[in-house]
Length: 319
Image (tube, rainbow, N blue to C red; front, side, top):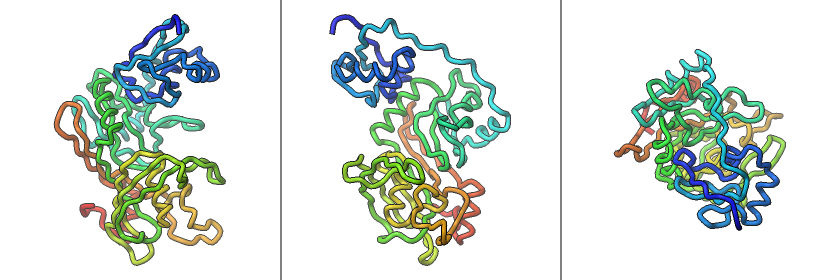
Protein backbone atom coordinates (compact mmCIF):
# COMPACT_ATOMS: atom_id res chain seq x y z
CA UNK A 1 0.00 0.00 0.00
CA UNK A 2 2.46 2.60 -1.19
CA UNK A 3 1.38 6.21 -1.45
CA UNK A 4 -1.82 7.62 -0.15
CA UNK A 5 -2.36 9.61 3.01
CA UNK A 6 -3.69 9.37 6.54
CA UNK A 7 -6.58 11.70 7.34
CA UNK A 8 -7.65 12.30 10.94
CA UNK A 9 -11.36 12.18 11.74
CA UNK A 10 -12.62 15.44 13.22
CA UNK A 11 -14.75 15.78 16.35
CA UNK A 12 -17.80 16.84 14.34
CA UNK A 13 -17.54 13.63 12.29
CA UNK A 14 -17.94 11.27 15.23
CA UNK A 15 -20.54 8.63 14.42
CA UNK A 16 -20.44 9.29 10.68
CA UNK A 17 -20.43 6.21 8.44
CA UNK A 18 -17.16 5.71 6.56
CA UNK A 19 -18.87 5.66 3.15
CA UNK A 20 -20.61 8.95 3.96
CA UNK A 21 -17.31 10.39 5.19
CA UNK A 22 -15.82 9.66 1.76
CA UNK A 23 -18.82 11.17 0.01
CA UNK A 24 -18.36 14.31 2.10
CA UNK A 25 -14.62 14.62 1.45
CA UNK A 26 -14.20 13.06 -2.01
CA UNK A 27 -17.22 13.92 -4.11
CA UNK A 28 -15.70 12.42 -7.26
CA UNK A 29 -15.22 8.95 -5.76
CA UNK A 30 -18.06 6.73 -6.98
CA UNK A 31 -19.74 4.05 -4.91
CA UNK A 32 -18.40 1.21 -7.06
CA UNK A 33 -14.79 2.30 -6.80
CA UNK A 34 -15.13 2.98 -3.08
CA UNK A 35 -16.47 -0.55 -2.59
CA UNK A 36 -13.49 -2.02 -4.46
CA UNK A 37 -11.01 0.01 -2.42
CA UNK A 38 -12.62 -1.20 0.79
CA UNK A 39 -12.82 -4.80 -0.40
CA UNK A 40 -9.13 -4.88 -1.34
CA UNK A 41 -8.03 -3.25 1.90
CA UNK A 42 -6.66 -0.10 0.26
CA UNK A 43 -8.83 1.93 2.63
CA UNK A 44 -8.27 1.26 6.33
CA UNK A 45 -9.17 2.85 9.65
CA UNK A 46 -6.40 2.84 12.27
CA UNK A 47 -4.71 0.16 10.17
CA UNK A 48 -7.68 -2.22 10.14
CA UNK A 49 -9.89 -3.32 7.26
CA UNK A 50 -13.43 -2.03 7.64
CA UNK A 51 -16.70 -1.86 5.75
CA UNK A 52 -18.48 1.15 4.39
CA UNK A 53 -20.93 1.15 7.31
CA UNK A 54 -18.15 1.46 9.92
CA UNK A 55 -18.92 4.32 12.33
CA UNK A 56 -16.01 6.69 12.76
CA UNK A 57 -14.75 8.21 16.00
CA UNK A 58 -12.90 11.46 16.53
CA UNK A 59 -9.14 11.02 16.30
CA UNK A 60 -9.21 7.87 14.17
CA UNK A 61 -7.00 7.92 11.09
CA UNK A 62 -8.39 6.93 7.72
CA UNK A 63 -5.89 5.52 5.22
CA UNK A 64 -6.81 7.02 1.84
CA UNK A 65 -5.15 5.71 -1.35
CA UNK A 66 -3.96 8.29 -3.88
CA UNK A 67 -7.09 10.32 -4.61
CA UNK A 68 -5.75 13.81 -4.16
CA UNK A 69 -6.04 15.94 -1.06
CA UNK A 70 -9.35 15.80 0.82
CA UNK A 71 -11.61 18.61 -0.21
CA UNK A 72 -14.67 19.52 1.80
CA UNK A 73 -17.22 21.20 -0.45
CA UNK A 74 -18.14 24.68 0.76
CA UNK A 75 -21.17 24.74 2.97
CA UNK A 76 -24.16 26.31 1.26
CA UNK A 77 -25.29 29.63 2.62
CA UNK A 78 -27.98 29.26 5.27
CA UNK A 79 -31.38 28.98 3.66
CA UNK A 80 -33.97 31.21 5.31
CA UNK A 81 -36.40 29.12 7.30
CA UNK A 82 -40.11 29.64 6.76
CA UNK A 83 -41.36 31.92 9.51
CA UNK A 84 -44.10 29.51 10.59
CA UNK A 85 -41.60 26.65 10.79
CA UNK A 86 -39.14 28.81 12.73
CA UNK A 87 -41.82 29.76 15.24
CA UNK A 88 -42.91 26.12 15.51
CA UNK A 89 -39.38 24.99 16.40
CA UNK A 90 -38.66 27.81 18.81
CA UNK A 91 -41.97 27.15 20.53
CA UNK A 92 -40.97 23.49 20.86
CA UNK A 93 -37.81 24.19 22.89
CA UNK A 94 -37.92 22.35 26.22
CA UNK A 95 -34.36 23.06 27.34
CA UNK A 96 -31.52 25.28 26.13
CA UNK A 97 -28.05 26.06 27.43
CA UNK A 98 -24.74 26.96 25.80
CA UNK A 99 -24.13 23.41 24.56
CA UNK A 100 -27.49 21.64 24.18
CA UNK A 101 -31.01 22.23 22.93
CA UNK A 102 -33.83 19.75 23.56
CA UNK A 103 -37.04 20.16 21.60
CA UNK A 104 -40.43 18.46 21.69
CA UNK A 105 -40.37 17.31 18.07
CA UNK A 106 -43.81 17.49 16.45
CA UNK A 107 -45.20 14.26 15.07
CA UNK A 108 -45.24 14.28 11.27
CA UNK A 109 -41.99 16.25 10.94
CA UNK A 110 -39.14 14.20 9.44
CA UNK A 111 -35.77 14.64 11.10
CA UNK A 112 -33.82 14.37 7.84
CA UNK A 113 -34.66 14.57 4.16
CA UNK A 114 -34.97 11.68 1.76
CA UNK A 115 -36.73 10.63 -1.39
CA UNK A 116 -39.78 12.85 -1.68
CA UNK A 117 -39.16 14.49 1.73
CA UNK A 118 -38.42 18.19 1.34
CA UNK A 119 -39.69 19.57 4.65
CA UNK A 120 -37.57 18.24 7.49
CA UNK A 121 -35.92 19.36 10.71
CA UNK A 122 -32.36 19.23 9.37
CA UNK A 123 -33.22 21.95 6.86
CA UNK A 124 -34.69 24.15 9.61
CA UNK A 125 -31.88 24.05 12.16
CA UNK A 126 -30.70 27.59 11.39
CA UNK A 127 -33.91 28.73 13.10
CA UNK A 128 -32.46 27.31 16.34
CA UNK A 129 -29.02 28.92 16.04
CA UNK A 130 -30.31 31.81 18.21
CA UNK A 131 -27.27 33.27 20.03
CA UNK A 132 -25.01 30.33 19.15
CA UNK A 133 -21.91 30.65 16.98
CA UNK A 134 -22.64 27.42 15.11
CA UNK A 135 -25.63 25.77 13.48
CA UNK A 136 -27.15 23.14 15.82
CA UNK A 137 -26.35 19.54 14.96
CA UNK A 138 -28.48 16.40 15.03
CA UNK A 139 -27.08 13.77 17.39
CA UNK A 140 -29.89 11.19 17.34
CA UNK A 141 -33.13 10.54 15.50
CA UNK A 142 -36.85 10.01 15.92
CA UNK A 143 -39.16 8.53 13.31
CA UNK A 144 -41.08 11.11 11.28
CA UNK A 145 -44.40 10.31 12.98
CA UNK A 146 -42.97 9.99 16.51
CA UNK A 147 -43.14 13.09 18.69
CA UNK A 148 -41.18 14.03 21.78
CA UNK A 149 -37.73 14.68 23.19
CA UNK A 150 -35.01 15.25 20.59
CA UNK A 151 -31.52 16.39 21.58
CA UNK A 152 -29.50 18.84 19.47
CA UNK A 153 -25.87 19.84 20.01
CA UNK A 154 -25.00 23.52 19.65
CA UNK A 155 -21.39 23.00 18.57
CA UNK A 156 -18.98 20.33 17.30
CA UNK A 157 -17.54 19.60 20.76
CA UNK A 158 -20.95 18.93 22.28
CA UNK A 159 -21.96 16.87 19.23
CA UNK A 160 -18.97 14.55 19.65
CA UNK A 161 -19.61 14.13 23.38
CA UNK A 162 -23.32 13.41 23.00
CA UNK A 163 -22.80 11.07 20.04
CA UNK A 164 -20.41 9.06 22.21
CA UNK A 165 -23.06 8.87 24.95
CA UNK A 166 -25.56 7.37 22.50
CA UNK A 167 -23.01 4.90 21.14
CA UNK A 168 -22.27 3.70 24.67
CA UNK A 169 -26.04 3.38 25.33
CA UNK A 170 -25.77 5.75 28.30
CA UNK A 171 -28.87 7.75 27.39
CA UNK A 172 -32.00 6.69 29.27
CA UNK A 173 -35.06 7.02 27.04
CA UNK A 174 -38.70 6.54 27.99
CA UNK A 175 -41.56 6.41 25.48
CA UNK A 176 -45.32 6.41 25.92
CA UNK A 177 -47.52 4.45 23.56
CA UNK A 178 -51.17 3.53 23.21
CA UNK A 179 -51.50 0.02 21.82
CA UNK A 180 -54.32 -1.99 20.31
CA UNK A 181 -55.01 -4.70 22.91
CA UNK A 182 -53.42 -5.47 26.27
CA UNK A 183 -50.03 -7.22 26.46
CA UNK A 184 -49.62 -10.43 28.42
CA UNK A 185 -47.88 -10.26 30.77
CA UNK A 186 -48.59 -6.64 31.66
CA UNK A 187 -44.88 -5.89 31.94
CA UNK A 188 -41.75 -7.58 30.77
CA UNK A 189 -38.83 -7.60 28.40
CA UNK A 190 -38.87 -8.10 24.66
CA UNK A 191 -35.74 -9.67 23.17
CA UNK A 192 -36.39 -10.01 19.47
CA UNK A 193 -33.74 -9.58 16.75
CA UNK A 194 -34.91 -7.46 13.83
CA UNK A 195 -34.01 -7.12 10.17
CA UNK A 196 -35.39 -5.17 7.22
CA UNK A 197 -37.87 -6.81 4.87
CA UNK A 198 -39.90 -5.53 1.93
CA UNK A 199 -43.63 -5.99 1.72
CA UNK A 200 -46.88 -4.42 0.48
CA UNK A 201 -46.51 -1.64 3.07
CA UNK A 202 -42.95 -0.84 2.02
CA UNK A 203 -39.74 -1.55 3.88
CA UNK A 204 -40.23 -2.50 7.51
CA UNK A 205 -38.48 -4.26 10.38
CA UNK A 206 -39.45 -7.85 11.15
CA UNK A 207 -38.47 -10.52 13.64
CA UNK A 208 -35.54 -12.56 12.36
CA UNK A 209 -33.25 -14.84 14.42
CA UNK A 210 -30.41 -13.76 12.12
CA UNK A 211 -31.22 -10.06 12.49
CA UNK A 212 -29.65 -7.44 14.74
CA UNK A 213 -30.27 -7.88 18.46
CA UNK A 214 -33.01 -5.64 19.82
CA UNK A 215 -34.27 -5.32 23.39
CA UNK A 216 -37.16 -3.33 24.88
CA UNK A 217 -38.51 -3.20 28.43
CA UNK A 218 -42.21 -2.42 28.75
CA UNK A 219 -44.83 -1.96 31.46
CA UNK A 220 -48.53 -1.21 31.38
CA UNK A 221 -49.39 2.12 32.97
CA UNK A 222 -53.14 1.73 32.51
CA UNK A 223 -55.59 -0.26 30.40
CA UNK A 224 -59.08 0.23 29.03
CA UNK A 225 -60.62 -3.19 29.56
CA UNK A 226 -59.27 -5.56 26.94
CA UNK A 227 -59.45 -2.98 24.17
CA UNK A 228 -56.18 -1.14 24.54
CA UNK A 229 -53.37 -0.19 26.91
CA UNK A 230 -51.11 2.71 27.73
CA UNK A 231 -47.51 1.47 27.83
CA UNK A 232 -44.20 2.85 29.05
CA UNK A 233 -41.44 1.60 26.74
CA UNK A 234 -37.70 1.68 27.40
CA UNK A 235 -35.52 0.75 24.40
CA UNK A 236 -32.22 -0.79 25.50
CA UNK A 237 -30.98 -0.88 21.90
CA UNK A 238 -31.62 1.58 19.11
CA UNK A 239 -32.80 -0.29 16.03
CA UNK A 240 -34.88 1.33 13.31
CA UNK A 241 -38.60 1.19 14.21
CA UNK A 242 -37.69 -0.99 17.20
CA UNK A 243 -40.60 -0.02 19.46
CA UNK A 244 -43.14 -0.23 16.65
CA UNK A 245 -41.92 -3.66 15.55
CA UNK A 246 -41.68 -4.99 19.12
CA UNK A 247 -45.18 -3.82 20.05
CA UNK A 248 -46.56 -5.44 16.91
CA UNK A 249 -44.71 -8.66 17.77
CA UNK A 250 -46.44 -8.66 21.18
CA UNK A 251 -49.77 -8.68 19.35
CA UNK A 252 -50.44 -5.12 20.52
CA UNK A 253 -49.48 -2.76 17.65
CA UNK A 254 -49.27 0.95 18.35
CA UNK A 255 -52.45 2.84 17.51
CA UNK A 256 -52.17 4.80 14.28
CA UNK A 257 -49.26 2.70 12.98
CA UNK A 258 -50.24 1.98 9.39
CA UNK A 259 -46.97 0.18 8.69
CA UNK A 260 -46.95 -2.31 11.58
CA UNK A 261 -50.59 -2.70 12.59
CA UNK A 262 -51.15 -5.85 10.55
CA UNK A 263 -53.84 -7.04 13.02
CA UNK A 264 -56.14 -4.24 11.92
CA UNK A 265 -57.97 -5.23 8.77
CA UNK A 266 -58.49 -2.41 6.32
CA UNK A 267 -61.35 -4.43 4.82
CA UNK A 268 -63.26 -5.03 8.07
CA UNK A 269 -62.06 -1.97 9.99
CA UNK A 270 -61.58 -4.03 13.14
CA UNK A 271 -59.90 -2.36 16.05
CA UNK A 272 -59.75 1.30 17.13
CA UNK A 273 -58.69 3.80 14.48
CA UNK A 274 -56.80 7.06 15.06
CA UNK A 275 -55.17 9.49 12.65
CA UNK A 276 -51.83 9.97 14.45
CA UNK A 277 -49.12 7.54 15.57
CA UNK A 278 -49.60 7.19 19.33
CA UNK A 279 -45.89 6.97 20.14
CA UNK A 280 -44.22 9.76 22.10
CA UNK A 281 -40.64 10.13 23.36
CA UNK A 282 -41.70 11.14 26.85
CA UNK A 283 -38.33 11.76 28.49
CA UNK A 284 -34.59 11.51 28.07
CA UNK A 285 -31.73 11.63 30.57
CA UNK A 286 -28.03 11.57 29.72
CA UNK A 287 -24.66 12.91 30.87
CA UNK A 288 -24.38 16.57 29.93
CA UNK A 289 -21.30 17.41 27.81
CA UNK A 290 -20.42 20.14 30.31
CA UNK A 291 -20.82 17.87 33.35
CA UNK A 292 -23.74 16.72 35.44
CA UNK A 293 -26.89 15.19 33.97
CA UNK A 294 -29.42 16.48 31.49
CA UNK A 295 -32.97 15.28 32.12
CA UNK A 296 -35.95 16.53 30.10
CA UNK A 297 -39.64 15.55 29.96
CA UNK A 298 -41.88 16.34 26.98
CA UNK A 299 -45.65 16.85 27.33
CA UNK A 300 -47.97 15.23 24.81
CA UNK A 301 -48.95 17.34 21.82
CA UNK A 302 -52.57 18.45 21.73
CA UNK A 303 -53.57 15.84 19.07
CA UNK A 304 -52.06 13.03 21.19
CA UNK A 305 -53.57 14.38 24.40
CA UNK A 306 -56.99 14.26 22.79
CA UNK A 307 -56.48 10.59 21.86
CA UNK A 308 -55.31 9.70 25.40
CA UNK A 309 -58.30 11.46 26.94
CA UNK A 310 -60.72 9.99 24.39
CA UNK A 311 -59.93 6.54 25.77
CA UNK A 312 -60.27 7.72 29.38
CA UNK A 313 -56.59 8.15 30.22
CA UNK A 314 -55.17 11.13 32.11
CA UNK A 315 -51.77 11.88 30.55
CA UNK A 316 -50.84 14.42 33.23
CA UNK A 317 -50.16 11.61 35.68
CA UNK A 318 -46.58 10.43 36.10
CA UNK A 319 -45.66 7.58 33.76
